[in-house]
Length: 225
Image (cartoon, rainbow, N blue to C red; front, side, top):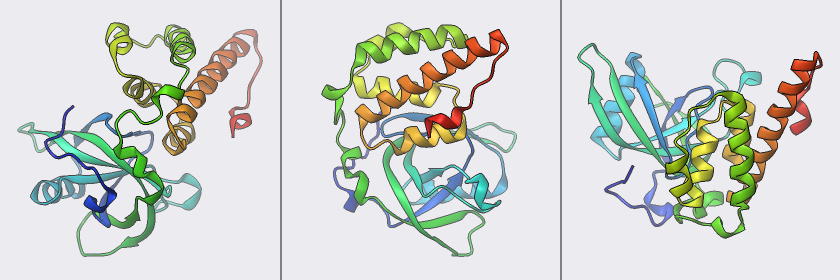
């Protein structure tokens, strides 16, 4: 989804972000994440975003850190689609802008959470297509086709094949049904090539795990970390 506002420098991004903690939700730069908003605090968060910079930070909760713990790395998304359902919900789409690192949580009296963040390590996120030439697109696509077939994922491969390499890698990373730790590793990948290689590794592991399960064996995904 296209954005009316284009960000060319991290200086254009706010030092404090509204935070939406959601397990298993992966947002990547220029990727689109549809969300169904119904909790009062997150309805208030969307209202606040619409009234100001339209930016919301997607972050996964960190299971080992208790109910309030968060992973340090998330992705800021711009609210690019909004509709009301008539029954108190919002249907929104966030388009990924840039990843960030949480510095500390802020308390400003709002019902939703806010954090002080920095973007310095991810300034290349603002460059469309950065690192595409280093991706082995053919190898990644071949493995993900096998994974999609084995996982019975419905994929519009015609659209995927026609997409730019960055869009392909990030769309596949967002749609594949990996666990929260795997999603976080894809988010934190240093560049597009690393993310594509991680996708291949995760798909290969899941395919091998499925075969072992069929044979009565087991597998430990922690080997990937």
